[in-house]
Length: 319
Image 1 (cartoon, rainbow, N blue to C red):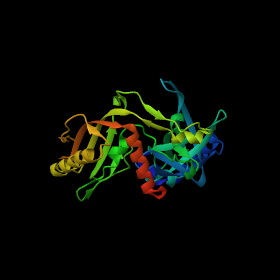
Image 2: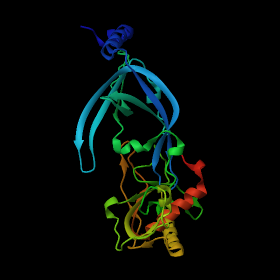
Image 3: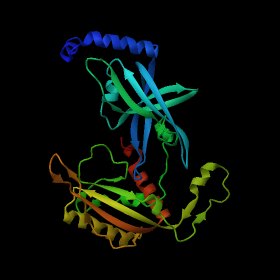
Image 4: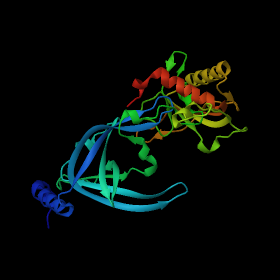
């Protein structure tokens, strides 16, 4: 019986045998990977990935596990991919929040775009590296674009999110505000996360639309103006805020509401302390939340987003 110490002393023999097995199973398969860079649209925070034109071929064996799902808004085949390489793919190992490598693979006449999110179960003696991920879901394929020219030139969200993302300065302090589920990797406080409850947006009145005469092309429809009174339930999560900072921020929101009429309060908000712990350091995070019921005109939120996009300019799209 081979001991672990004996196997560790001769990794070359084991690695060579496994590499030959991978080559035979995969028929010397290669997978093409395309590099993408992250682009975040100003103010409404939507994330897109833009192709850089840089591609590379990697050798290995690709395994596909397919699970079919039928849901209310989609019917998809969820394709889980395992890419086994005979050498470390540093591009897939690198933790780079602004770049991503996406593999392309043809299955039944369809090209799947595969993004890898994890690696593990790698033994040095084996000389194999396993990368796991899912093919990009059809509903999210629009977030991968071929060039910056394909990025949307206008706001995407229809709720009050642009209002909250624009509120970054109170007193002499400026903190970033991020949309929920789109907070960048490893952000250090202070920062704020704005979450608008998707199923709580309500409208007590019918929308008023102003059409641009008789449009002769689809492009003219962007000139259509729609205004509707709406209500959102908003949760602002504050990290790294003291009590005084939280009240200063809330006071700024009250002043902004009074001075601009861009939104009004439907409740009496108050900063609340939240409990977030980490066992390793036996400490509590400086976390607070502010719940706001906001009344606003959707046209106002759209106008805020457009003004800030224009003032920021295309160069401010962050990666």
